[in-house]
Length: 188
Image (cartoon, one colour):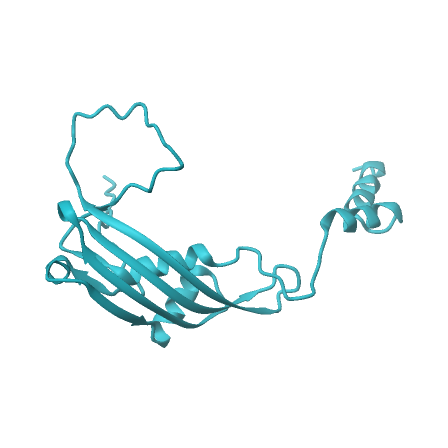
């Protein structure tokens, strides 16, 4: 008899900075979050970066009506990536700001969710507030991931694949099309 073991344990975030809801209820909080070297190394590995030289965030957290928690953050991160053309190191500075509102889950079971109407002009709906704290550090990490350039290029490097293919195809050299044409004539 085979047995499948599934772990329900969640991975510990690399840059965890939690704020309890009780702290926020007492008044607005301001926090400066700075990632240390092991946290930066772990985040760089998570995001596929060559390095994360710095990560600093300033957060404001306050309570709103109906148990909502509002988080406003600005962050700066210095990232090191590999150029998608040359694979040489490319440095970039990220300066971003974001707002997130959390609200207690309403437990509205019985609602018909077959049709959802989305108006792009409307504000984003609140994130579900589960537990008794909000992890601001993980929020920052997620927004860093969103701000990273998916195709970094070293300054001055320009590559146009359509021109490279066209140049190789016309000269009868080792373009992919010339190789395929040669294979077509071979008998196996």
